[in-house]
Length: 102
Image (cartoon, rainbow, N blue to C red; front, top):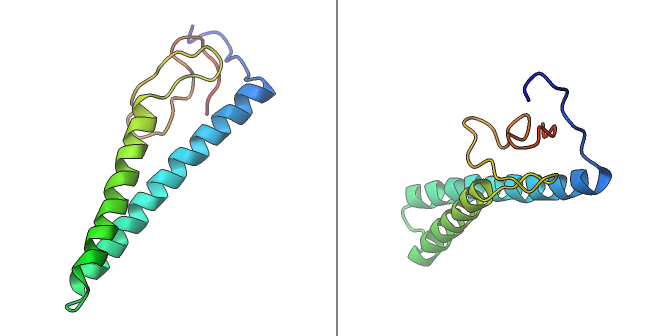
C-alpha cells in the first residue's frame, strides 16, 4: 500500500476529521494553559490552595482527555485505529486503508 497514491477523504470525512483534530488541539492547549497557571500559582507565595488545586485539576483533566482522544483515534474513512503516532497528532496516511490524513 505505500506505493499507491493516498485516497482523498470525502467532504463529510474531512469535516469529521477536522472536528476531531480541533478538539484534540484545544485539549492540548488547555493542558498547557493549566500547567502554566499552576506553575505561576506555585510561585506566588500567597496564592490560595483552592486555585492551585483547580489549575492542577484542569491541567490533569485536559491531559487525560487528549491522551484518550489520541489513543482511541479512528480513521474517518475506514474506522481503523492507528493508536499513538510518535511526534505527530496523526499519521500521514491511515495504516489500514491508505487515506491521506495529513
